[in-house]
Length: 209
Length: 193
Image 1 (cartoon, helix red, strand yellow):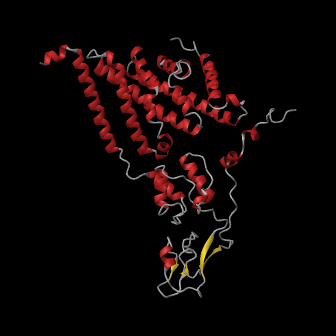
Image 2 (image 1 turned 180 degrees about the vertical axis):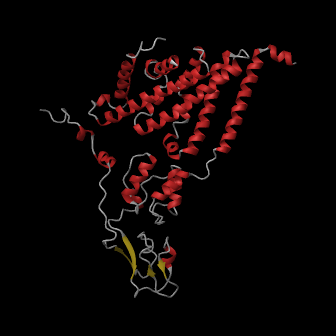
Image 3 (image 1 turned 135 degrees about the horizontal axis):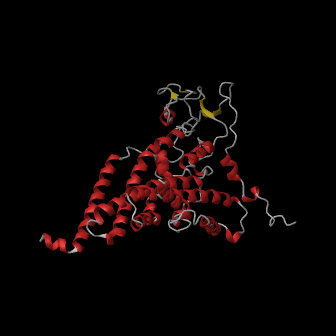
């Protein structure tokens, strides 16, 4: 029986190829266990770039789920109004894609940073804003007056909607000496992105002499 | 030593796999629109090509030749390359998630990069030994990386240049590749083969 197999080169060929396939399969199987990726490190990196307002304006329940969706390619990078243009730019740099304008469907970027302010004489103590706040920046109890912890508020607007007596306003944060900073210059990529080919090289066709 | 140096020069410049032997043109045209991804692709291909060259040499000399199965080189090399590419994919995913994000769709494409199979098969026909095979694969990858990065840098400039409309996009890319190929033909005869 063995001689019969060894005499026919076809059998040796088949056996060799099968053996090779099994060998490589075993190596790859071992490698997939050894190089198993626990969680996605990319999700963590995206998550640190997001503003952590947990506001949900992107359509995901928080910054981490949105980061996961970006990493899986299910969501665009332009759905974060609190982060605005600078977040989109840093996400684009991290992921190596083109920066795209903010998706207006998910809200517009606030011109100035705002915090919530509760008109305390109007507040009826319903606790609805407390439940809406994603960062626990509102202090208060049932039938007691509520107030906003200014240093914790991310200005996400989520508490304005549930208030039954409309006593919450978004007030712009006044700039003080301690938080004033120079505006960052536009990055090279932003400048280049706004230019057309004609801006770089003069064309004879466009300006016939 | 001189002979090994000659192999390196010959594969990088004189017999450049892309521009002189016209192998691996698909990634050469496909991944050269951005310098960043071209560099990543070069790194991934260098890793895979060297490893595949060594592995296919081992398979050929330890398994195929003793059994007289030289006619199986092509199919078994394809098997080797596929395995090496899968391994590299896992390795890169673990070690560099950003590179993986950039190269995600290109890593499996290395399987069909004919330069990889070309190197493995030429190792057999030129009857290289183990070290020569490794060097030949590494040199081929270096040559591939060199022209890919050069070409990507040029294409980045070309995209903002005032190209006549009919030549825009792939057309001017092809012409540029042809001119680069002509330039590399000038290395012919640098190393006696």
